[in-house]
Amino acid sequence: MIRPQHPLELLAPAKNADFGIAAIKHGADAVYIGGPAFGARYGAGNDVAEIRRLCDFAHRYRAKVFVTVNTILHDAELAGGRQLAWQLYEAGADALIIQDMGLLELDLPPIQLHASTQTDIRNPAKARFLEDVGFSQIVLAREMSIAEIRQVAEATTLSLEYFVHGALCVAYSGQCYISHAHTGRSANRGECSQACRLPYTLVDDKGKTITENQHLLSMKDNNQTENMRALVEAGISSFKIEGRLKDLSYVKNITAHYRTLLDEIIAADPQYVRASSGRATFSFTPQPDKTFNRGYTDYFANDRQDDIGAFDSPAFVGELIGEVTEIGDGWIVVNAEQQFHNGDGVCFHDAHGDVQGMRINRAEGQRLYPAEIPAELTEGATLFRNRDQEFERALEKESAERRIAVTPLFGETADGFALTLRDEDGVAVTVALPHAKERPQNVERALNTLKDSLGKFGNTMFA
Image 1 (cartoon, rainbow, N blue to C red):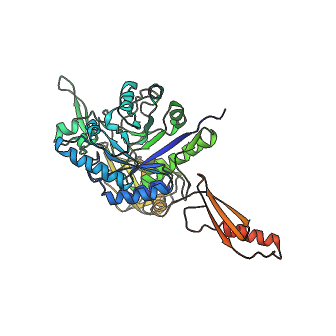
Image 2: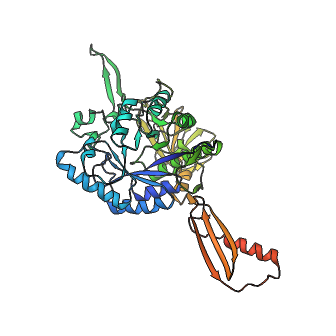
Image 3: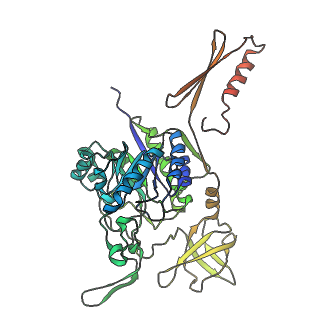
């Protein structure tokens, strides 16, 4: 018996249309992007024309575009929400990501609805409810274990989405009100003040200071690299990367990383297939440690872990490179095996635990010449690299291409010749040309010339 094939979707963030296009070139099967209003990332909105441009590009590869309409709406905004839903549908969007169940009462277009992370889905009962009211795909809470994910998968036929990389909230998404309590800015209205990234002093009930000036609510970043196979087997079909506010190098690097992991799973098991067309190739080796992170954790995927906090700093410290052994007049020496480049960024923790940074003007082996040496730097300090200039330059260029495989079939007709091109999805086109026929003087050479000519797709999306 032939087992049904299961598409695995890599879902990447898009700050704007250009970021979305880059994500697709680097292997994303789908991207999610904010529209002009009602998105849960203030400052990451895009007009409908830009979303249409992204949809036009994505659909060439059968990739999809999901648009966030995932804030809680006031009654006076419902008409605007309905109008936006229709505009996005007409622009080509494949799904709306929503939180507010009031939208279900509106005259919405025939478009898929995906449940936002703000809906806080942690159990089978809620998943079944969302299936019953018409959702097609739901993103499960980051706090769920793989065992709990499996329980939800067994209880619903919905496509299950799960965050595999990026920032973690200290609270359940959609249930956090600290921003609103502190500043009046509601996370459920897209205005989170990120109070969880601020430093706090912890005092006990007797007034004794337990710890001072620590980022006690700041989480490390999510990284499910080691759990991808287990997540697939548990029932996840959409693997989501957080980061609609992250920079382009992050989108390229992290998308390429998870594309590589999913392709390995698909290649090893014929029951899994890619959710879109074409194969991405990269001019760099993906390295998640090279782009912004607060240190990594797989959080609760394998049950609760102790080491999940980034309490020292919410900043990007980067890769450990070694110890400062000498400090001279405008230079330092680092005991490190890595190769440094002009323009690298390095940092260290000072005596107060704060992160201090330096930009390297010139690198000569282990001797580095920073633009300025902070007074807090001492011999014996541990140094990290949070900007690899050579890696960043590679990502600033066109760093990937994505092509759809095409098979040509050239044949003879009664009055000439016909060429059929069939792509990897079975889409075909045939062109016939009436032409006189002559026997070639050198059959082998003619055949090789024909093969060579039919293989020239130039700067197109085909290969």
